[in-house]
Length: 396
DNA sequence: TCTGGGGTCCTAGGACCC
DNA sequence: TCTGGGGTCCTAGGACCC
Image (cartoon, rainbow, N blue to C red; front, side, top):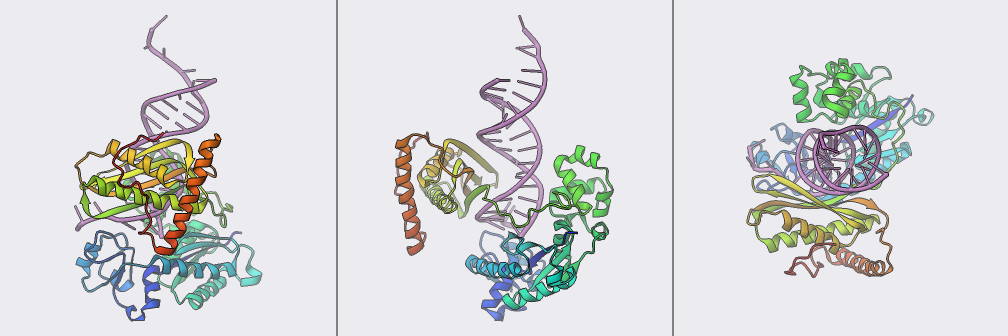
């Protein structure tokens, strides 16, 4: 029988900030940016949640609901550091770890009984170990399946442990709102409601063929989840494998919308540099470059172009991004957001001819050197010299 | 309610090939 | 001459998650 833990840190970003400034404890705190900024709430303290503030809510709305809240920008470096601390503790309990995000992870505890005791006792031990090592509250769900453990850790909040014994998976899920199932969002909830399905138990009772016909693959997956079955069945063993990313992207929302071509190009250059840098860090080359742009009215477009070879060079990414942008931008219309994304990864360029290979190697070294300089002097100092070049060139 | 930034996966149509 | 079927790649959009 498998034993899977899901560990979820409570109000992680806020709790980390409290470590650095204990006077924040117990107060309404919002991490995500200043109250009057464009942006959304990344994390809200439990005191702030009492006013209706929750993550993904626009900061301005949060301010209206709770003007006395303390608004913080957030410090990613701190969160990564403490996330690593949590990971270190998890590793003491099992080598089979999968960090699902910065503040949550799965642990395969199958076969650790002799070392750590039965599941519930082990979960309490882990809960306390994380608290001792990091000073942070966390919640743990334990069961035979990833999905059930994830839902259980959510039910255990704040700062609790919940164990679902083998065989009790479906009856634990049945009374919960369908929205509690990971994968059912606003839209999915609406379509289920229109069918008279409100609880997970209602969903579990439905005929699989009906769900497949009506919702395709997604419907089938939801039916499985409602019954407490993991996507890969009960015995999937994918915990502990970490893969290369499928895409790397950066985007930016302007403080004020702009139709200034020079400013927009500068942003594309900057975003391309950031993407290129991450590609080099991962040792990846990308064949497809995609841009994303959003107008003032929030209508959003993506446009992609696949190269005949893979690249990790800022200039090639930028040239492609700029080409796509000028081909699709309704010039003069104000832009709210720009983004650059690379995908279609491979480990080399796939270019066979020697000349472009040599040239690429030179450029790669140059950009890697620039990466080092940016480490030393900060991101803002070193940029593409071509940002303001006037002529437009179609990429090869 | 005036809506971030970083991701994943799925769908669907069209091109193109055999 | 109006017309198959499968496979794969590319592109665009959308739901969802943290």
